Amino acid sequence: MRRYLVMEEASAPGQLKTMFNYIENNGAPWQFSQGDRLQWAKGLMIKKNPECN
Image (cartoon, rainbow, N blue to C red; front, side, top):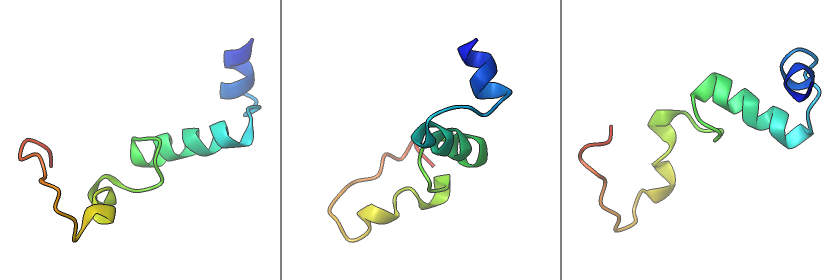
């Protein structure tokens, strides 16, 4: 029943709807696209994992 309400009726709390929208559009629960996710760390002394794109 819960799956039906969420998937078919879009009946979920606001924060879950937002998260689902981000997952649908960006492939992750964050509002940023994959290319922009590390923008917050620019200028910081954080090493990027070379295996990650």
